[in-house]
Length: 230
Image 1 (cartoon, helix red, strand yellow):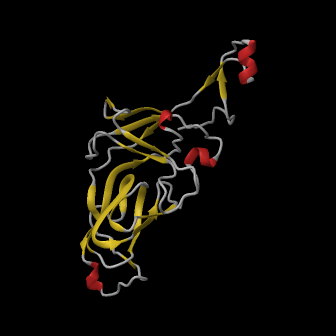
Image 2: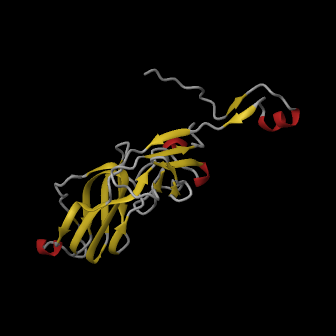
Image 3: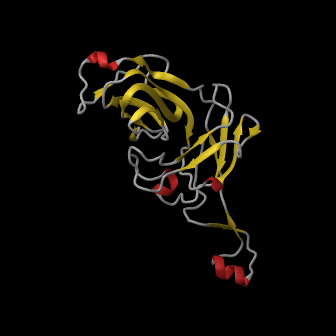
C-alpha cells in the first residue's frame, strides 16, 4: 500500500474563487478545507471488572504499613495484563487506600494513574497494558479490571471536533460521552492525554465502533497525539 502526504501546511484551501474581503481574512483564494479522519476502534470486549486482579486479601501478606506499597501480581486470566483495545481501568477494594496503576498506552508510552484515597477507582486514562499495581495500605477483596471508557488514538481538542460515532450501523454521537484530551501537564490524576469516548452501546465483543473526527493541530506532536504521557 502506497502512502503520501497531501501537504505539510497547517491550513489547506481548495478552489480558485477569489473575493477580496475574504482573501483579506484567509490570505488564500478558495475555501478552507477541514480534513476528517476515520478511526476504526474495533469491537471491544465487554467490561471485565476483575480481569487483571481477581479478589485478593492483601492483609494476609503481613507487609503493609502506612509507608509501604506492594505490587499486586496480575491475574493469569484472559487479559493477562493486556487490554483488547486501549481503555480505562476500574478497581474496588475494602479498606481505605490509594491504588496506583502503571502500564502503557496504545503507543507503548509508560503511563500511570492513581485513585483518590478511598475504596474504588473508575479510571479516566486509556491503558493498553497494565504491568504493575500498587496499593498504599491494608486492603481486602481487591479486584482490578477494565471499564467501558475507550481511548482515542489522536488528540481530541473538543467534542465539537467529533463528526460522527458509530456502533455498527447506528450513529450515536449524541448518546455517547466524549472527554477531550488534557492540555495541562499530565500527572497520575489528570485525564487521558488524547481523549476518550464511552459508547452508548456498551462493549460486548460484537459491536464495532467507528469514529469520524477532525484533528485540529496535526502540525505538532501535541496537536496530533497530545501532551507528554505521565
